[in-house]
Length: 244
Image 1 (cartoon, helix red, strand yellow):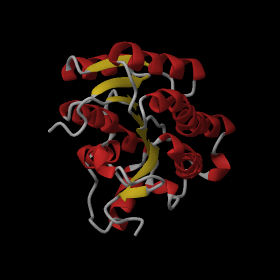
Image 2 (tube, rainbow, N blue to C red):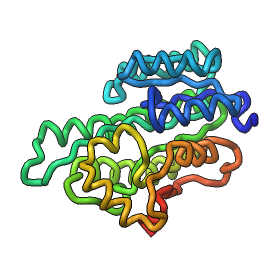
Image 3 (cartoon, helix red, strand yellow):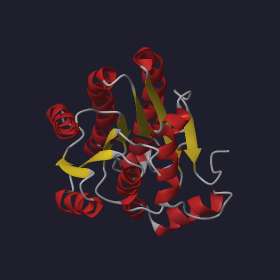
Image 4 (cartoon, rainbow, N blue to C red):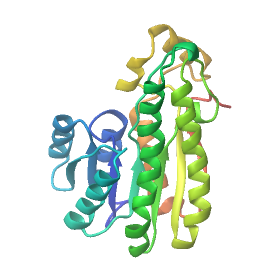
């Protein structure tokens, strides 16, 4: 316990699933956490469950203004910002020939633009705090793509690239930037897959099972903590071996 004592984190998409698991674990390890999400009712419930170490902020990650508001909450409520987990994402699946421009732009707006805005918004407060850790949740689809997911794959490959670029640029401020690449994780997002698609992905996974949200959260905790103080620009899979 206490691996994040004294640190303040923003976890986007923190209302449920993987983001909520990260928020709970961070708070249990001593961090103050701003849970940001568009799902206000679930976000408030998750923050209330955690208690005084968490606060909910309604937050559309594709909005510059709402990023300013989320960072302001961290600074006003807890006095600093040390950790950012860019976890918020959406997934829309369809064959390429049927993938609408509207759906493609929606996915890119949340998954790619949202991460860009978050990284940019974190630079000043983390620099003022003496450094920090940005953990970008990419995907196995940001290393090896899957058919029917062109918008999702495009956005997650972009997160991989932004992580590397950000790591090189922000090292001078003692801000580390790493990405996590989950495989087939048992979250609400997986419900956007057909059962056949999920079964096929599990079959391709050497460990032959779905991953759990806590297995991703444990890696996020390591990358957020000082235990990974010499890691930046890393792209770390937690995928049961599917990208090996």
